Image (cartoon, rainbow, N blue to C red; front, side, top):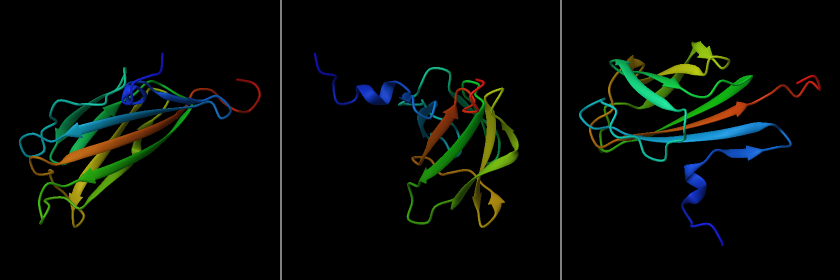
Length: 131
C-alpha cells in the first residue's frame, strides 16, 4: 500500500551511505515569542524559550550535527530579522543547542503568528571506519 503524501514528514529521513538522520520541526509562535504547539515534530525533539529571543532545542544524541533555522515572519515590519545558532551551546553528543532570534543584532521575540522552521542533520556514527 503506498504511503500518504504527508507520511514522510512524520519520521526522520535516513541516508545510509552517509549515516545521517534528518529531523525537522515547525514551531508556530503564539503570544509574542512564546512557543506554540509544535507540528511536524519528530520523536525526541523539543524546544523551549529560555529568555527574550533565546530558544533551547533538544534532539537525539549524535556524533556531530548541522543546524538550519528559518524564520517565517507574520508582519510586513517583522520584530526579528535573523536567527543565529549559539556555537558555544552546541553539544551534539548530548543532543542540545540554543539559538537566538534578533532584530538588528539585538535579541528579540518573533511576533505572534510567525513560525520557526528547524532542520537538524545528525551523524549517527563516525564514518572513520571504526564506528
